[in-house]
Image (cartoon, rainbow, N blue to C red; front, side):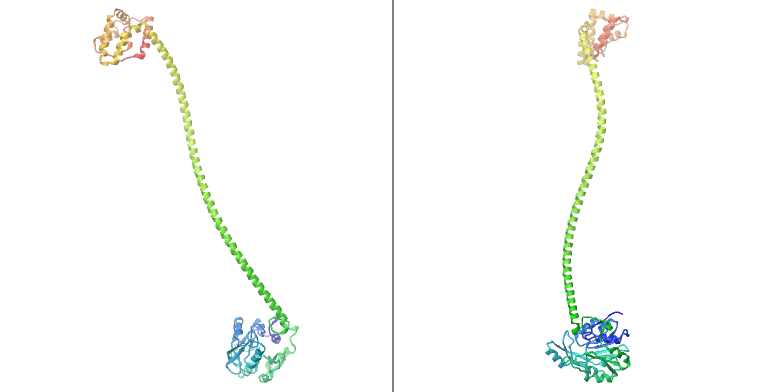
Length: 468
C-alpha cells in the first residue's frame, strides 16, 4: 500500500481516509475550500481519483482551483441561509476570509490586511442540486464563524453526505462554537463521532458503521506522511524545510538560468567565431581553388608547349636527318666536284701546255691567217663567207701551203670538193678541223704516223676555239 500524503491543517484528511478507505472514485463537497493545496482537505482525495464541488468566495483561490482542479465543479460564491449578495471580507493568502464583520474586525485588530468585496451568495440546497452523483461521501464546512447560516441553508435537499465535518471553535477566542448549529445537524440524522480540537465529525445514521474509524486520533498505523504545506505549528519545521528547499530550488533554478544564459552567450560567440572561421576558410578555399585552376592552366599550357616543342623537335630531328643526308650528298657532290675540278685543272694545265706547244709550233704560225679570219667571222657574220674565200684564195696562192694541202687532202676526197665549193659559193660553217683537213693528201692515201700525230694535236688544240 502506498503512503498517504496529508495536506490538511489538522489531519482531517487522514481521519476521512481511514473511514472511507474502501471507497474508490468518491465525491466530496468542500465549502470554504480555500487554497487548492495549502491546508486542503480535498487534495489528497483528488489525487486518488475522487472529484467534487469546491465553493470559494475568494477570487484568488477560486482561480487557482479552476486551474488545478479540472475534474471538480468550482463555484465562486459564498454560502448562507438564503441567496443574494453579501459583503465579503477577504484576507489574502490566509484562511481567515469571512462573511462575518465581527470576525473580520478581530482579524484586523490582529494586524491582517483585508479587502472588501461583494460576492454572490447561494444556499447549501443550491449546491446539493448540482451534485452529479448519487452519493456524497463527505461534506466539510469551514467558513470562519458563518457555519450556522451555511447549515441553515440546508433545509429542503434530501442529500445526506456520509460524513459531515464542521469547524466547531471560534477562530479568535478558541472556544467551542458548535452549540448554535449542532442541533440542526443532528436533526437531519447525524451522530457526533469525533472532535480533533478544531473540527467536529458527524456520521450519517445510514452509515454508522463508519463511526468506529473515529475512535482513535491519527497515529502511525494510518501510514501517512506530511506534505509540509500545512500551516499548523507541528508542521512548521517541516514547512520551514520545505520553504528552504523551495528557496534552494529557486536559487538552483536561477543559477541554472544564469548558467544557461552564459552558455547561450558562449554558444553565440562560438557560433559567430565558427561562422567567421567558416567564411575565412571558404575564402581561402576559393583562393586556393582559383590558384589551383591557374596552376592547372599553366600546366596545361606548359604541356601543350612541351608537346609542340616535342613535335617541333621530332620535325627538327627529321629535317636534321634529311639535312644530314643532303649534307652527305652535297659533301659527296662537293668531293666529286672537287675531284672534277682537280681533273679539269689538270686537263686545263695539260691543255694550256698543249696550247703553248701548239702556239710555239710551226703549224700555229702557219694557221695565223686562218685564225684571224675566224676572229673576224665571230665579229661580222655577214662578211664571214667573203673573208673565208679570201683566206682560202690567199692560202692557195702560197706555194708551200698548196703543196701541203695536196699532200694532206686526197684529190678525190669530199673535203677537197667541199673546200672548192666554199671558195666559189656562199659562206658556210668552217671548223678549225676543216683547216686541218686541207692538210690531207690529195691522193687520199693513208697518213703516216707523223702526220696522224700532228693532226691529233691540232684537233686537241682547236677544241676550245671552235667557230661557227
